[in-house]
Length: 326
Image: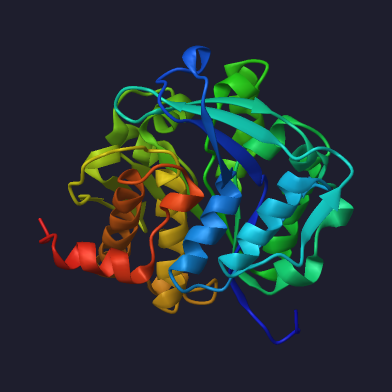
């Protein structure tokens, strides 16, 4: 990457293979699976790229056919893979079944993603990124935990905005308390923090989403709680609000949160925002950005899979044109 280049959104974390159950609604009864590229940070990078942002992915895959497939898929979607490491470990796998209502059930078999080391990071890439986005799955193992924290610190030193979507999977942790303890520091450094309803309640220990909204992140963070088909709640510069989501027929919610956060960051950049002027973002502009992100998430829910469900800018704009503002 040339020094003068700027990456709009760089994501750091896991790229993996989702084996999605074709017909079963729980993994214990699943017999047929379809292979798909996945991993929340990788999905978010593709989501941003499909919407027109310059996106990059930092992570590790195995030196195996699955790793080659992931590298090819990311590149084919316009994601910069110069910081994707190919390691001797096997590529990480996840088996996924959609429960009733489209809620995914995951079982992970960890591999190369957890082997990413701090020295594998591209300081130049992070230094030339407007947003650096991370999640919590990489924190469950070493050395990927140290690599993720090092990426966040490098981003902060360079003046990039840190985006965090915990994407918490309690089954991947020794205990819920351990998960909350390890993820808490990320929440405090986030310039942009996106959580879902369950995470908002877990991280704040309060039942009211309105109260949780006020307790999350820092006072100067942009905090967003996604609420499924109800859209999202937001807090920014002492103000709060809600944005609705277009109504769609839900098929599979896998990847909807990644579509949302990729769209949020891409649209902030499309509107010209970075660390130098994010404070100029007005509530009305934020509402427009979040309507766009909600529409992206809604479209994702109408399709099967994670990365395969992510929309283009034209598709999001078409849905918004058909969805009158509340």
